[in-house]
Length: 195
Image 1 (cartoon, rainbow, N blue to C red):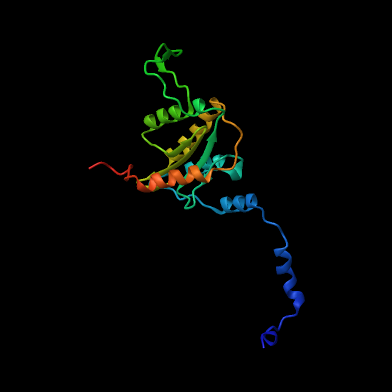
Image 2 (tube, one colour):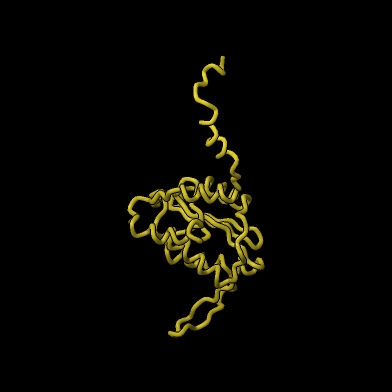
């Protein structure tokens, strides 16, 4: 009875079968999914101003950042030769004078350099670190979404990573991403105004 319901000749089904013969690699699937993902900007963000800056950071444009699943953040991993390049406690009191004669703290590692920029911008990432690899996710919690600060600090992370000798990229670690996910889920709303 099932055969009697098919009224189209078999030749009409060949294009669909032909599509199934193409191989889709995980990398290709990831690239297609990333290209289809759209950013979700936080309220008050000038989308027209931020979108071109964001686009240059994304993997689809040759950058190293990916949008989070909901499009409300940017994430990527950074890998360095040693733990000391990734994160080392800088002894207090280590300074040098810049060209203007002002004292500047010597920064010897990636995570400290990023954290100092976070302090300046009054914004922080969700991040995790295992030995010489750091996973960073930039998102804004209140108002929820991707903000100009997220995009600016992601670009700043790229520049800082170059300064500290970031190694060529490897596939993102699900372990580090999962660690950041767990901590972010259990943390209080850090971006909400304090009462």
